[in-house]
Image (cartoon, rainbow, N blue to C red):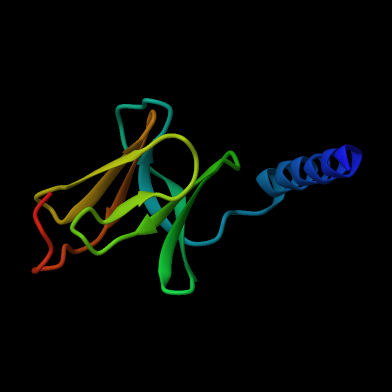
Length: 119
């Protein structure tokens, strides 16, 4: 069982390395500031998906890393869907949802619902 899991993980790693070198990530381009960078640049790609009645955003970095967020309708915009790090979100005056997780920050063009509680 362990050897099968190892082979599966090794295969995923090889495929990930190929993807980084040959294909551009799919989705719409968003601004991000990764690994503690001060400046936002349009280097990330966001894709929407659904699972039942839940909505998700997967943000892919150019290096192959990614983060997954669950969209929520309670005024926060998104929450972390995976991993141990929690996401914090704030709305800017320009109507952009800025989300931070660990040392990474993302800007999602979005609109806050008029009836949502203010964060």
